[in-house]
Length: 230
Image 1 (cartoon, rainbow, N blue to C red):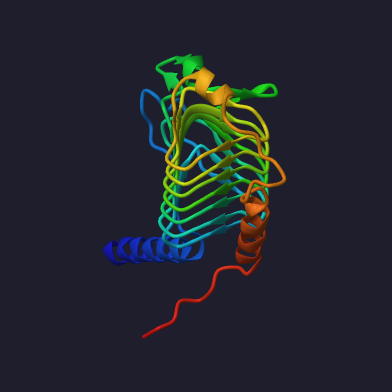
Image 2: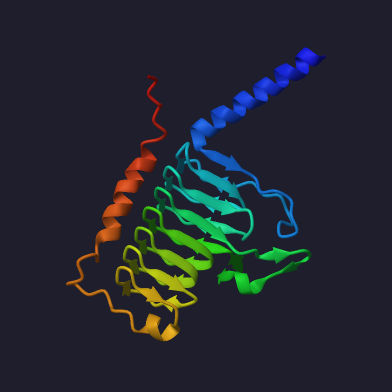
């Protein structure tokens, strides 16, 4: 009997390790006052989660998404986190949200609404989240938008075709479609957000996101490479 239990435990551990090697650390959230339901991530079969990435809890990941090493997508407090098809989550990116439930009631001030549904973080299609950027809910990012390296998006909604240059910080604002946020800019008022420059044909990064999406789609399509033994 003891041997059988030990064997079962060993097999379970092996399955867990193999799963981590294939799809990264993918796990449910845990019961808490802000987690009324234990939820397992929903990940499209074509998405690629690097073994050193983590996807936890109430998270939906669409088709052909590449989640890179060191990325953390945690739907264990703010729920749900949604990432649309053909987007990418690069090295060291953090996606998280403030609690959207407490006890038996919802906290709408910590949610964004898209159509008839509410989310902690909603990321549209063909979005690039570059290295070490942070998206903290409540937040919404429109289609074809680029969020640059080490940028922060918190309590903010970005429209379609927006470029957030590296190091920019956006807190508590809405950015209209077709704007860009200059590098290292701090935007904390709606007046500042409304004054952001338009993307014009002369803007040097107007096509940046297309190239980044193309590269990461190929990384997703390539599947999980086998680790080299040394």
